[in-house]
Length: 599
Image (cartoon, rainbow, N blue to C red; front, side, top):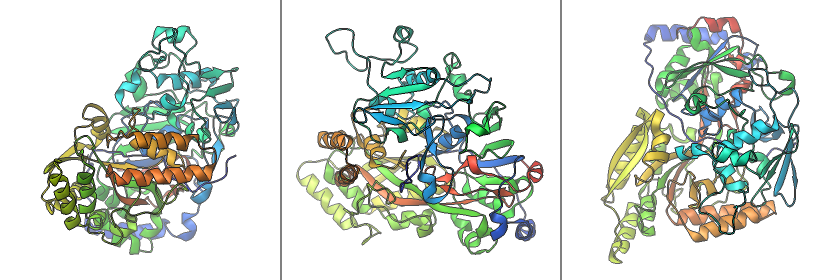
């Protein structure tokens, strides 16, 4: 097993709709008194979850993607972890223990050879699909091959298979444009051979051949994009996204996209093969909400089924923070911890071409006021870097004096714009800003408007439906906006899961800054090739500094999580690799209480 590392999670953003629920003030007072009797306090909070019952889960939005090769957000990954197993994973535990890489579908965390360019894994025996069939090497190989197919056109899902695995050799002497291998649905899947850099040594042993040495490849295969799919199960590709086959503890019972997702037990899951997933509830009901204030109000009141409810990807609403965190009973029902996430604005370098114009946007931002929208310092420190402080690759720097002048420096910003104009550069006076549409983020967007009005820049707000946000900004509207709101959490504990996916212009990534810089590309390659971990960390930190000098991104705040749950819920903690509660660890104190739901 790999030792724990100071890490940060996989996740980006998720979204949803609003559910309204009227609750009388008098009832709220009475139910708060009930909460004090029903658990939230010290000893009760430490009770182990019991098996059974229904856990209700509030999310900002239901997943757009359940197909493992398309999963991209933290909520999607958290749910995917209940449906499908990956070669490796992380211990389901709070704090440093949760950063330990452990075997999952595989028997160990991988066996590297040939200078970390070849990695081999052996699959566990006894892992079965929901139809009872065993999971084999061919299923893992086919799953990864799918990422090379037309699924890539959807501009979603992790791109690591495309960039890490060796392509097939061309048939002739001339190098073809683009990739040779085009996925399993073209040319009879390379006449049955598939992607040749993935070998099935036998039914249980899989071997990967990489383009470059990757000392942390065993962390990479913990992602759903490396998950298994049986050939033929996905003949209906859109249907498979709504209801993928399960080899984890749960399978999909019903799915109303955008509304509700219900999971039930997979009868062929064997707990003896899966020490990391508690899988306590008999059923999980995951509901789109979209409004942290409504969710917090429900949990403060703690009535009926809300006693068995947990907030997954939204924090205690700012309007409730003082009440919740100062109440000795309510505060015991809040899981707190670092998310390892950075909230930032991607600055489109194609639309804001001059570096000084981009730097002016960084100087003008009032980060202190923006953070207050989310609840102030309790929700995280002001950010000066893209690599968060809990990664070893993090380096301390503050190019725009955020800590010294958190309200921004509009005079310095105006000076840079004047210098650029004097040299004939065109700093835009009108810019567009895309963000997910909910009440909290609209308030955040207003701070952006106010910040840039101080330097004569008008901001046209482009709120996008929460459910469609990443589909739009990574897909059909990619590159359209001057500024794009993102919350990024690394996929594994290294700068290699921050800098390349966000700022490498050579591959289809989350590079919403549209940065395409040869110097940065060369340094990325150098960092990947560096075998010494300490030197590699230093290189990623230097790249972080270089990227922010270009003004391609504006880090705003490092995010902490404050997730509330009902008095009947147990096992809630902020997992360091998920940046949110781990659904695999959560259960109920009294499963029978969960049946008294008010919906």
